Length: 216
Ligand SMILES: [Zn+2]
Image 1 (cartoon, rainbow, N blue to C red):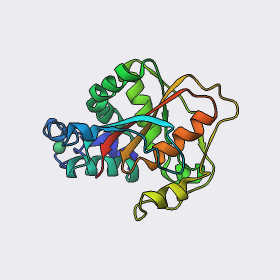
Image 2: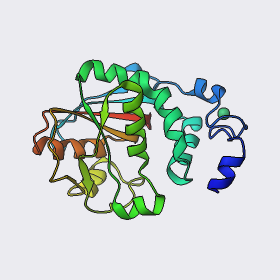
Image 3: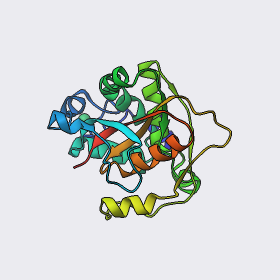
């Protein structure tokens, strides 16, 4: 698989045409979430975990082209896709950085067993590539303590229950004042909020969220 990858010209993860990892046509298809207001998420004060997450922003609507690319990144070992995705999402991250000021980008962690199965954490690859193209720093601050069950079928309250106790701050780390938690897809923001509450308890003053795709 890896050898074939090197020998053949890449096929676009969005449309299958050969030539680029993501072709120019597919990149042009990526669009911001439809309603501009919908790009920003204020924390829901009524949730179980409080209002730890200041704001979250997604670069693109989770439409079929982006879905295919992100699924390839996540499930088909196509780790090289993190770079073109980060390049495409960088302008949206710069918008968030103008609000947040200097911040450390940290990925939503996956459980060590799942990372071993997959070989990498897609959010970590994205955080690293996003840091490269916005001249910020990326680091790992959170660890995943329990392998949570799949979230797809749960509503928001179910997701929050499922996630409680899932994350912890790495004991050896010195938390910076401002952090942007990076994930591939933003759905209910339950994951980002849970990460934010753990980070706030560890002394981080401001926690923001950033995702490549916004699923509604
Ligand atoms: Zn394409």
